[in-house]
Length: 68
Image (cartoon, rainbow, N blue to C red; front, top):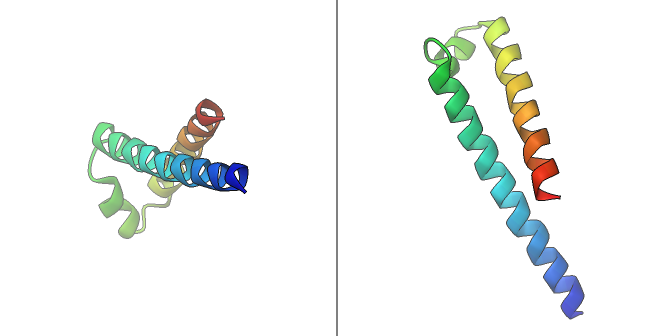
C-alpha cells in the first residue's frame, strides 16, 4: 500500500511539474515571437496557432523525456 501511495504521489508531482514547465515554455515562446501570440490566435491567426501548438508539443516532449 505504501508503494502505491508513493507512486501516486510521484505521478501527481511530475504531472504538476510538467504542466508548469509547459506553461513557462509557452510564455517564453510568446515572449520571443513578434506580437502577442494569444491575441493573434484569438484574432484568428491560424499560422500562429499552428506554430504555438507545435512548439508546445515539442516542449512537452522534451519535458516528458527529462522527467522520465
